[in-house]
Image (cartoon, rainbow over all chains, first blue to last red; front, top):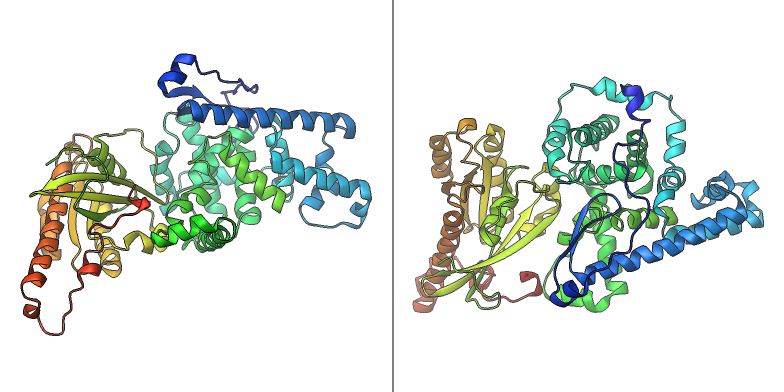
Length: 308
Length: 215
């Protein structure tokens, strides 16, 4: 059983094609709330304006997709996965990659990632460029199944909290909120809580891991993505016992706000409003709880991967 | 008393905080009181959430700005701003999980470390509808409340039992503290005990303070 569930595709296959949603004239007039299922199976509720914004985002993603396909056609499939190209995005300047063509490719790739990765390519591109593939390759093939097997039945403070949060993660989601979805999410979170006992389990990771499961399609890849995010990509100690990394992020965010949006910053200061009260959730959940699933996590990862 | 009123029309604005272990039902108490909603499929709270509701006390309109936060231990480190200016608190435990009752002492300490000594505290045993699963007796909880000098009520956000009462009681008590204090100072400031300065502004930081964050 453990050998198989990391390999198989999830039962629910989400429509890879994105449809433009057309609100009827009536709903536009009456400003009726529109309800629909998004790319990753979430029910999104919003007014016509919200739907229009999401449509714009989808259109941009579609256009970006065309750029990716065109590049694949000219540079060859998986050009972005070549070590000379991806290592530059990781900030490692290999001698061999100082060739001009590689450099151009790396710069193109950064720009492309920043503008968004087409949904169908996300699993492959995220897995490779985040370093998750490399991380996985340094341990025996059976690492994840061994880990889940070894921790089965163990009870810790982390597992108790995880069990408490499983039904409260994305309630109502057609796959996550099923026994199968709960078990997959549980295995990823419990497994990670034993991999890094400093982190254990922090509320918020449930939302991140759940979306990773939906995007990455296989449980094992979701696990490695979670590992690389916490260990290499994000600010360190975001989720450890005193959330110190999260404090750092909040301070940086406040400084950025003063620098980039001085009027908003001044206004908030006059009101003595501490932005960390709202921003904590954004950063700890990588926007997966506050923005539609098609936008939140993909946006966070695009930023993180293009900066790293 | 329970009429829902327009947001900007109020005499007092009081900040209340909800605290207690993860999963005791803080968010549902909040949604029951402010929107009369209960969500069986609620998501775990990360960071902080807010909601408001105004009620009438005597002839005044009191607006409650209620803050809700994540219950997991490590989140306590980021919540000093959470307590700032709070004049009331609902300290919630789950009557079906004894461990949530055992932890209230630590929550109480946290509360007293971060807030004014005059804060009005309501000790709340939630999920009282789950009678067959009860793990904390009313007597034990009552004894604790008496010892710690807090108010006490058992509630059910699901059945809408006592939720209204719990919040209203806290708000009314705060209102009394505030109006009495204003009266004392107005009548005879010299009557205050020597060496003790009561700063009305700090003490009742919430009175008529308007801000965008008052939702």
